[in-house]
Amino acid sequence: MSKLILEEPQPPESNECCGSGSCCPCVWDYYREQHALWRAQQASKSGDAVVVTDATATKSSSNVDAGHADGGGDGGGD
Image 1 (tube, rainbow, N blue to C red):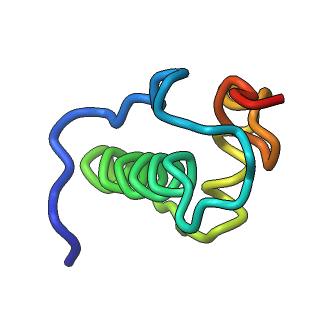
Image 2: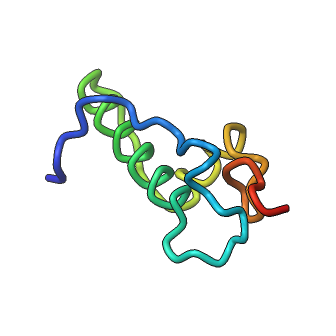
Image 3: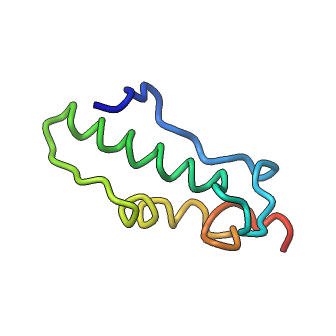
């Protein structure tokens, strides 16, 4: 089993993302991955079944990071 994430991951601050979309991994990629894992762990604690995929992570965070060039952050450089 993966490491337990005790607190819900917070989205990156606006100054943590350059907005270029060329960073690999982007701080938003890391956030989406950690948030998907946290949600799955929360669901497993409550007995709900959750399948974590890249699509789940991207879809779930699309509403909080719409400003980034590739779907995250504040759009920094643009």
